[in-house]
Length: 489
Image (cartoon, helix red, strand yellow):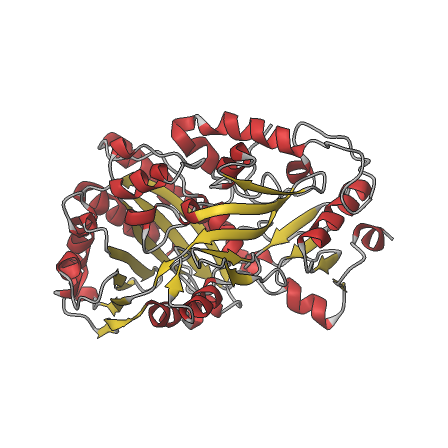
């Protein structure tokens, strides 16, 4: 009875049906598979409004899924509740002047880029095609154009969002300005975004690809990361982007250095990335190509494989050579010590450079809830990513990840190279990204905005359904939607 009463009366998939199983399993990590009462697939913002009204009235818990890429349990799944899948909110069109693209949260970035390429345009979205639009933008979003445009979310000029009371509102620089600010990094604490309007820019030929190196090149590779990320290294060129990572099978001590490189101009092997290209590579796909072709190449089987368990954990350090060596050594030493007996574990550390220019661009766009100070200099977002198969190893992998982060942070603080930031899109269960925003000053403002927009402004939603759930201080998107990262009371 509760499943029927809590599920909206529009397209849905019930427990036990083939469609239900397909939708429940449509996540990147097995850690996120949970048995919801049903899966609701809205076709419009009004459908979302209707569903919120019903879920409030019946006090039914729910989760919201865009692309399902976040591997934390409960982030895009729920047991004993309703899963709202945004798959069919897949609008893609341009304003008449082609300066803004309307993007639905049900899309993945490779779909957006491929469609926009037909109009000789692109936008500053995610780096990997299979990642969903919604989660990336609400969490900030690291992209290949950051030193020119800031976080991906800084390129959103308008959010269409359904609030807790069912209202469908626009949040932009002139309407609901505080909500506009909060949605840029504040995640799903304020409503369900049903459309993102993003700035466009002309697509051009780029140089880029993936380089894999032999383990014997590890020292040169770590030196390249340290050199590129430093303030006077290759990252000082705003056209250059590098996504270097080190993969490791702790059980065999096998190491695989690799880097995704991109230069946003038709320049072969640019000087800004020479520190990587001069290292002899075991394989190298870099070439002059279109941006769309480059992104499609990143759609490797590992990003589509949904048969593994995965986790993310993150911290940040200043962009100095000392910090790079410290993080690398701590990561490998801890992996060998703590999880070398797990034969199914693949772990990696990725060094993601956020430049001072990036943070300047973020503020110049109007700012965001993340609100990091450019005066503090460039830094590295470190991502610890794990892939394994056996559920019995979940706790071991989580403990290892927490210990790696704790040790890197402790050593970085001692060496004065710690950077106090937790990137939400890379954060693990139990981490607290909002506390790191704006040197701790954004959280109080985010809570105030959440309370403001979480209240019922009138007695009926646009769908005509009564709103019987009293407005509580935690808000509907705290009390009824428990997954993901919450602001707290």
